[in-house]
Amino acid sequence: MSWWRPSDIGFTVRSELAALGSGARLLGRLLALLGATLRRPALLRDQVHFLGNHSLVIIALSGLFVGFVLALQGYNVLQLYGSESSLGLMVTLSLVRELGPVVTALLFAGRAGTSLTAEIGLMRAGEQLAAMEMMAVDPVQRILAPRFWGGVIAMPVLALVFNAVGVLGGWLVGVVMIGVDAGAFWGQMQSGVDVFKDVGNGVVKSLVFGLAVTFTAVLQGYVARPTPEGVSRATTRTVVIASLAVLALDFMLTALMFSL
Amino acid sequence: MERSKNDVWVGLFVILGLAALVFLALQSANLLNLHWQSGYEISAKFDNIGGLKPKAAVRSAGVVVGRVRSITFDDSTFQAKVALEMDKRYLFPKDSSLKILTSGLLGDQYIGIEAGADEKNLVNGDSVTSTQSAVVLENLIGQFLYGKAQEGGSPAPAAGKK
Image 1 (cartoon, each protein chain N blue to C red):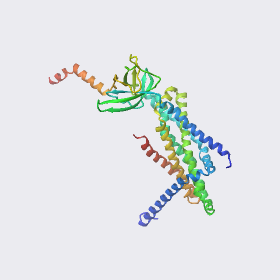
Image 2 (cartoon, one colour):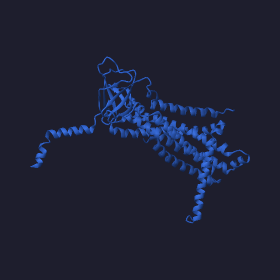
Image 3 (spheres, rainbow over the protein chains, first blue to last red):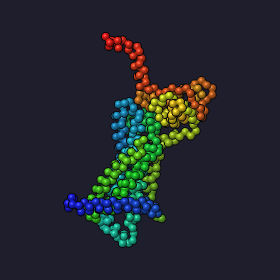
Image 4 (cartoon, rainbow over the protein chains, first blue to last red):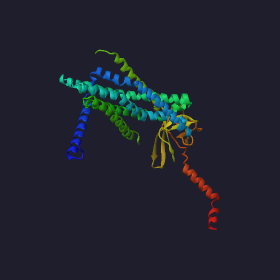
């Protein structure tokens, strides 16, 4: 294959556009299938259980350690300027605005997104999706939509748990271990954090990341080549694309939400 | 519809998420204390508010007794008009004075309120006339330099001429 020949360039552009178009159509169908998914709550429940509950331990542990580290590093810098009392504010704002949604989404892509891609890709490789179509069962509605919406529901919950555990971790290191005054820790936090502007925008962020990560995972599984190699490549692509999408979206959302 | 043991776990998962949200809203953002619905509002005009921001604290003897609600510019007197929302538990005499202060060297600016001697108290809608502007560092330095120049400045040009 030679990339400089006009016919090859044309073919590449055409196939990329076709992939983009079919991806966008799948996203549209998944979004439109919210009602149909909610009418079969048992499917949705099992997916929330699989994607959410099983990710809880890794998310909570990561949140705890991120909180620890933030408090340690924050204390080192803040005590230079004699403003250790702002430690709680710094830990909470960085968690709620940025680290909570982003780190949760990255972990979620690794922990839950890969398993979604592999599952759907293997269903395609094993011709289960084709068999469903033969039985006039729509695989997008029966398989993809519950997984997609399950991930979208689980992600903000996980991010909230991450934030709460992270704040507790910051408190544990800052107040219990280092000995920052507890009243100043919570007081500065309470005067500086806004429920809707900070906590609420963090939830919106995690919702958007949930959509992006879960959709990437579902799409990569659905379009994976039905071979062992194809499934393994699709799984890798899920992590790469989802992580980059989360980071790029985070920059855009931050620019929209927190710039005056 | 059939029940499954996943129901319990998914329910607990969602409850855990809600608990995290409530924790963040109450413990770190202090949702309940943000809106003192039952406060009274007073206003004051300052020549210069420096770096005062909305939601800054109003303190008396170091205790937070209210918050700055809004800051607007009055283009008839060319002064800053500051609306304060005071906690209804604390009452101040009508001739109390307001001062813009800074907590620490680099800290936030807040309004200090000093009680006067009037027998009547401030009520909703009152305006405080006795105010003191924020200290602007540039003006202080300017005054200091000007004062120095007045004191010992005159020999210096003369020395230059010799």
